[in-house]
Structures are given as structure tokens and as C-alpha cells.
Length: 301
Length: 244
Image (cartoon, rainbow over all chains, first blue to last red):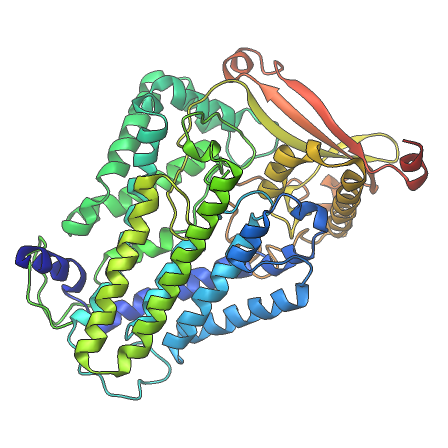
């Protein structure tokens, strides 16, 4: 078991700095506040009950969402915002992060619950998990308005694992996105025919969209469609290398940003987890040197 | 149904997706497991958080347990192809195109019988993509009186926002703090009521819900080659409702 334990410790606890963790804390809070203030999730509670007819009782219990309680939902929304401000400024960030995580688990499904029980890619999936991790970690030891009550003499590895967990979450988005394409559709997914159909379907709609011609142009070039399909699968399925080879992040992170810019241009599809890419870089050096490739280390955490 | 979010208004076939085939009992079981997963996750994070003030060994054990559980929770839905939000299987665009494409469109009709496109922001605080997908999946199963209730609510909503846009203000609520820098919805539409002259001059008296159906290749050859099925026209005035 020793090599496995060494690999486990190496994966989660290598490097780490209080300031890098604080950056992850601030980015998580800012991104979540941005999404919350760009929606009105509590208001969904106030739509007529007829819209809720397709929501199974078990789903309502799962998220503790019961329509017709606007005031209560407004209070939950306000609690989430107050807690996120605490996380952002470093005022009791750990309890605030825990409260925010729970409140978001309840609020996030509101956006789509009238037709689906899985509100993924709507901007709040990463925060729910990241905030829970932050609630356990010493995320308020740096860049905080209030200094921690106990002076910190922690081992840097204690600051490493929450950042690693957020990285893992982001990696899961890409890897499983590729994996589900292969498992649900097969290699045909990357065919010129299927890619072209996606491009046409998204750009033939009558409604006004920011972009239309780039997707139609791409659809007219089967070789490019095929390359795009294969390139997407290759990119998504190999994305996990960023967890193990630090230098790969220099290629993959900008490539991911380009990838999403391309999807936006071609299909008018936006995602909201790009700000979390910041956690793939060490903005402040760790006190413990980090090797280029992960190797097992003794860990104090 | 879980994991079937396909960019909201364009529906593709996913016959191979197991999430479409789960029966009701299976769906309930999946919901309970997903809820249990999150409860366990939250409980472990709470335990680990409370142990942070204890001795290093207890602290360390709690963090390792939390990490082991979270790792399994993050990757299991992906490999098992089951949704357990916030532990998602990330089934993004994992669909195979099979004609036809179906796309919901909702138009407003004014007192002169003129039909107008509606700015997507006019549906806020509902997210238009979610609303349209809901309509696609549920509208035709609604009883006439429920359609009337939903129709009236939506008509009032768009008329309220039409009036706001006509007065030169931004319709909807999502941009109330950040304006054009607000977090976009997953599917982005261009605002069409961007100045008062572009806004329909009179309130709508009716909504029409259409299901647009087309084959992408045929429509590529002829942009007019699509079918537009009227799913709903209403809400009717109270008297008309009774007559029906």
C-alpha cells in the first residue's frame, strides 16, 4: 500500500500556499456572486403551480424546494449572498463557505427545476463543492479582512488539497464530457456528419443570435467539422493530464478558453466556469518546491 | 430525463442514453441516492470542519475521509452514467443527430392581429431556455384550464417587460446589477428590444406557441423548408374560455 499512499499524498498535498488558497476562495466567491446577481432564483418559487406540475415530489424533497414560498426563498438567497460576501472578504470564511454551499445546493436547481432535476452547466455546480471544501480548509489565512484568531504555522500542504479538489472538478467536466460522447454515441459523434448537424441545428433557428455565419461556414467544410469533432474528443479525454503534468496547463488552459470562445462563436453557447481556471496556476510560490511531475512525498497534512 | 439538457431549445435524439430509459421507480431511486450522496458529502465536510480545531491526527483523518468520499462522488456519476447533481455525469452534447430538429418559438400577437417576436429577456425572472424546454416537454399534456393559467401568467410577464422596454429601459431582471456584463445563460440570444423603436408598440393580447420542425440538411438547401405547428394560441378572454 505504501506506493498508493505516497501517490495519494503526492496528489492532494503537494505544494500549497495560503495565498493561492485565498485566491481560490476569492474566485469562488466572486464567480458565485456574479451568477447569483445575474439571476433571480428565489423568484422561481412564485411562478404559478401549473409550471411545477412535472416536478416529482421526490425531487422537491431532494432539494427542499417547495413552490409558493417567495419570502422564505428571498431569505435563503440573502443568506447565500451574505455568506458569500463573508467568504470573499475573509470574514469567518469557513462557516460562511459551509452555509453558502448548502444554500446554493437548494437555490441552484430553481433555474431549471420545472423540467429537469439536474441543473448542471448553469454556473453553480462547481461552487457548491468548492465551498464545502473551503469550509474545511484554512482558506482565511491570507488575503482576509480579518486576520485568523490563531497565528498560522501550518504546513503548506494544508493549503494544497482544496485547490486540487477544484482542479479535479474542472477536469471531470472535460473528461466525462468526452467519455459520455463515446459511451452514449460512440466514435460517430466526431463524424463530419454529426458535427455538421450540430452546427446547422444551432444556426438555422429563426431567433436572433449573436453569431450565425461562423457556424454555418464551418458546417460547409466537412473536413473541418471532422477535425473539430476529433479535436474535441482528444482535448476532452486528455484533459486530466493537467492534474499530473504542471507544464501541460500552459497549453490546456488557454486551449480551453479558445475552445469555449469557438463554441460561443459557432453555437452561441456560453459556460460559466472559466474563472475557475485560475486555480491551475500558482500565483504565489509554495514554501515547498514543487517538482515538474508529481512524485510521492512524505506529507504532514 | 436527468442529464437531458440539450442546449434547451434544440432537441437531439439520444436513444442510447440510459437516462431516457429509466422508469419512474428507477428515477425515484436515483433521486434518493443522489440526495443521500449530497447529505453524506455535507455531513463529512461538517465533521471535517468541526475537527479542524482538534489534534492534528483527527484533523488529518477527517480531511482524508472527505477527500476519498468526494473523489468517489465526483467520478462515479460519470462512469456509471447517472446524474447526481452537484456530482454530475457531464453529459454535454453527447447526442447523435437524428432528424428532425424541434425548436419551440413563442410569439406575441397584438390587438391588430400582428404577430411579433419576443425578446428573450421578457421571460425573466424565468430563464427562457428552461421555459421553452418545459413547454416542449409539458405543454401539450396540460389540461386546458392549466394552459390558460400558464398562458395568462406568461402574457402578463411579457407585456410588463414590453412596457419596460418601450419606455427605454432594459427589460427583465437578470441584467439589473451588471447590465450587459451579467452572467450569460447557457444559450445566448441577441436582444431584439434594444431601443424603444424596436419594441412592439401595443401590448400583446395573445401568445402563440409554435413547434418548429425541420431536417437540417433539407433546410440547408432551402431555408424555408421547415414545418411550424401551432401548439397553443391564448389565453382566450374569460367568456371565450367558457364557450370552449
